[in-house]
Image (cartoon, rainbow, N blue to C red):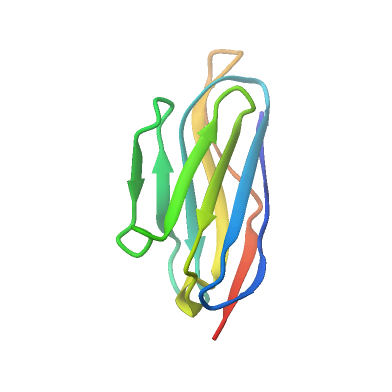
Length: 120
C-alpha cells in the first residue's frame, strides 16, 4: 500500500502565498506521475498541476504563472508553491501519485486533502 499525506493548507488573504507538501510512504518501488488536484465547493475535482519522475510539468491555465510544482524523488516528496492567490483558488487540494510497488503491482493513491481558503 502507498499512503500520501498532505500538509501546508490554511487561510490566507488574496495576493498571499501558501506552500503545500505531500509525502509518500509505503511499499514504493517507483513513483511515476505526481499531481495536485483540487475540488472547490459545488464543483468537480480538477487538475492543478502535475510532474513526471523526470521533472516534466504541466499546469492548468488557472495555475500558470502563479503556481510552481516540484518534487524530491529521494524524499518521495512533492510541493506546490502557490503565489498571488485568489479567492477562486479556495478548495480542498489533493495529492495524487502513481507508480509501482515493491510487489510489482501498479498503484495510484490519493491523499486525504488539505483545505486552502483565500479571503478577499
